[in-house]
Image 1 (tube, rainbow over the protein chains, first blue to last red):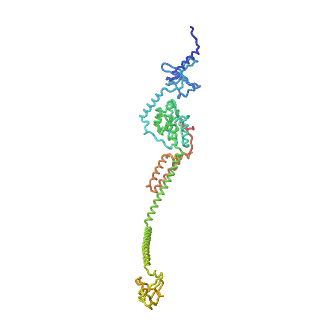
Image 2: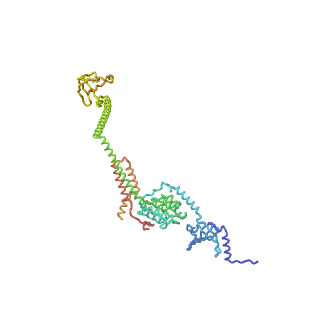
Image 3: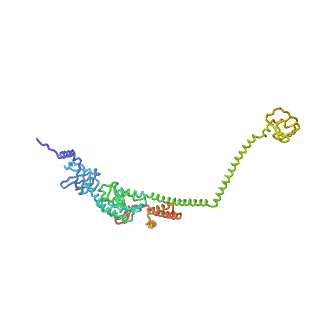
Length: 414
Length: 77
């Protein structure tokens, strides 16, 4: 039986398919040391990943570059995530990277913790060394990269809050080997420039990107800086050694600008508030004294002899009135009693009877005549009527034999 | 520009923060009822003087950011 012959392309294609079908090779993480790293102008990165015994060529295509957050360099230990495929043209298999991380990331974190512990033990984070941040700084020093978001943010926020503030940038690298030394030198520079506060920082990035701010030389520069320092490294969640040494940590560069620059309008408002309050207080003070004076005046007036006399005169008047009204009361009562007596008397008076046509007869001895027996003809009697008296002479008397009917008034004769 | 510098020199020892602190203290005194009127006038006059100093201390000249180079020279950003 004759063996079948295959073409090279068919073979490489076949091998390629085998690789593709393999579960492990289609998604794999490989760690190793970078060598032969080439950043191609097309954006692709070619490099070799190796360990002590072996090596594999690798490529990261431009389209996957967002999976790489740092600049790869020779000798770095990295962890590459991707797939193994066959490059059919050369009959080579390669690692196609979709994500590359520094393998030492755990290491970096350990280094950070170690450094932090060391410096903490030295007392570089102690609160007693923290300087207060001046509230109304006029000159603000900034250590950061002259390009990039951080300086823009700081400028925008600062000038928005106070257009009259003087910002002084001491440009520095904030990433890479030279960054730490650069930052430290810039801090020293600004410390000699009579600025009120220094902001040291940069925008967000990976732990590697921010690493310069974990270096001891930066920590020492901040610690020995006579000017208060605000650190502003990365985002809210990023903490660096610089943050612990600084007099104040701002979560972002924008926040640092807010902490360093007092809002101009607020300052003016504060001043106007002071002025207003000062005037008010003085006004109150004067008003208080005026009221006090007035109350003394009133007390004095109350105690004056004139006032005493006036009050006594008033008393007298009141007493007089009372006396009068009491007296009138008594008088009224007596008068009423008197009226009652009058009425009673009226009931008993003979005059009333005279009014009704009756008369009262008196003989010459002024004795009441109530019987025919008392008079005889030619006696003169006096007849009393309601409005006067009549002198009359008796002509005759007739006894009607009605003795016993009262006193028997004498009917005047016709 | 010269005038500005002179002004800055005069107020070198004066900071807004201290000014406001002094004002707080003066107001505390004024708020106390015990203060005699004459003393109150003195305190008030002092307060107004400090306010004026504060006002003088506020810079009202807009500035551009400066860049300090390694030779210690300034230039515009």
